[in-house]
Length: 138
Image (cartoon, rainbow, N blue to C red; front, side, top):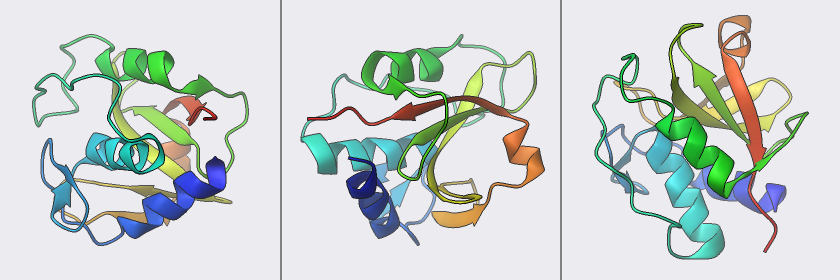
């Protein structure tokens, strides 16, 4: 499943950033990327996505993203290419970003103001990892 997830994520490279969108080539945010990979692997999304503010760095709203990851993805101790990483921008903040590990020290993700890209998992990002999850086997 990991290889298939990574292959699907790579198809999204270059998709423009659009808050709450999830349409390959047209627009997505970080969650929209993961949702799009899910649809490619399984079909329908497992649950509706509630509206969320474009300020992912905000401290309100609880652990909605982390809790959804725990409901639908399989937690892993050691992430491998194709797995989903979730991040906290600050130690006391809820999880507000996600990406798909693309190998070694790189990830595929959507960041406001940029298209979906593959970027280095530099120490700044590594320190903010709050969990790693695999897409479930069919």
